[in-house]
Length: 357
Ligand SMILES: NC(=O)c1ccc[n+]([C@@H]2O[C@H](COP(=O)([O-])OP(=O)(O)OC[C@H]3O[C@@H](n4cnc5c(N)ncnc54)[C@H](O)[C@@H]3O)[C@@H](O)[C@H]2O)c1
Ligand SMILES: CC(C)[C@H](C(=O)O)[C@@H](O)C(=O)O
Ligand SMILES: [Mg+2]
Image 1 (cartoon, helix red, strand yellow):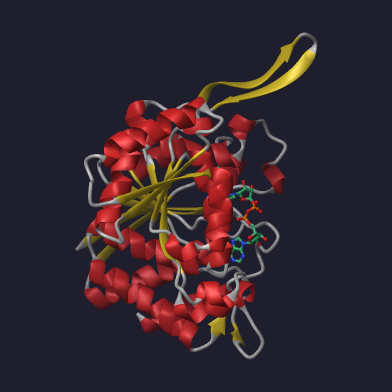
Image 2 (cartoon, helix red, strand yellow):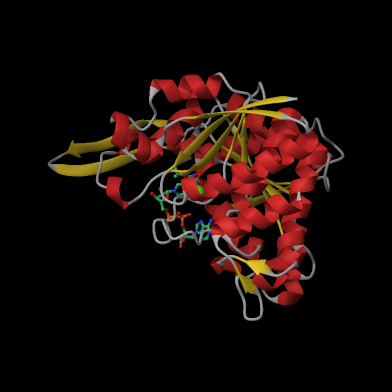
């Protein structure tokens, strides 16, 4: 099969982890006889430096002209003082919006070899963690208008608007219930309906959609309680569906309950199923350029890419197994390293996983 993929390495550790993702993609393509067509493009700070634009038109064109997009991460201190609309992050928000990637799927699965790396009590971890956060990605407070910094009565005010339409909630809720049907048949909708009108609408719409799925259990949690329950009883979750901001926060929290942010992948999909795949972590400026980042989140994002964009389930499984095998042999990047294990660099971890596929 021909696999046409646009690659956006981005900033910081982005290029480092993407290099390892591509290494594994090349190994799997060779093994299964697929033809890879990779097209690289600029995004974020890298694009700002070269083209004075965090999302050049050429990048949008190359993404639309591909069957899937693999992204590293964007951002870093070098660009932190720019106005919001010129920061690297606006390139990422821009491509999500331009491709209408409304559903961000973030599986949170405790890999058996990483049980000890969890920050949770071992008796909690032992009950297993296998949930998926479905985060609405193209609306909510990230995109709502009005927004900006204004002068009012001689004082500056900062303003953002959390806004959802019925249709926006419906489509992401439906995806959550469809996902739950193929899993443990439970949806937890996370909102702040005790305070926010936008969350009241969110909850009403989720309840309406739930009527189409009587076999799926529906639970509602306020986001503050959800943040607590995620560490108290992670084993009890199946599909969590939530808004853009709440999903961003809860998925980083989920990162450490399974070991490290460096292990969690994601897929962002639109209604046509064009997907953008990226680790949930950022550009990690504190460790960039040292070849010590964990590439597993990106490598597992490649597995999601093969499964979701190309239907290549067997290849995706082969990558997941290669990751588990490599961890099983005791190889660890610094973020998940414990005494008695074999410390490896980012590129060595990529080499070992590529060898196992
Ligand atoms: N999707 C994205 O591109 C994305 C996501 C989050 C943050 N960011 C941007 O990244 C920059 C840094 O943000 P931050 O520090 O808040 O979040 P971050 O996710 O980059 O890093 C948080 C912490 O996790 C560690 N970490 C992250 N990924 C790791 C990996 N693969 N292996 C080992 N350790 C890892 C980092 O070293 C750091 O200590 C900011 O500019 C932010 O806007 C981008
Ligand atoms: C960098 C930032 C815009 C982004 C977000 O908030 O969506 C990141 O935190 C993420 O989780 O992908
Ligand atoms: Mg985030």
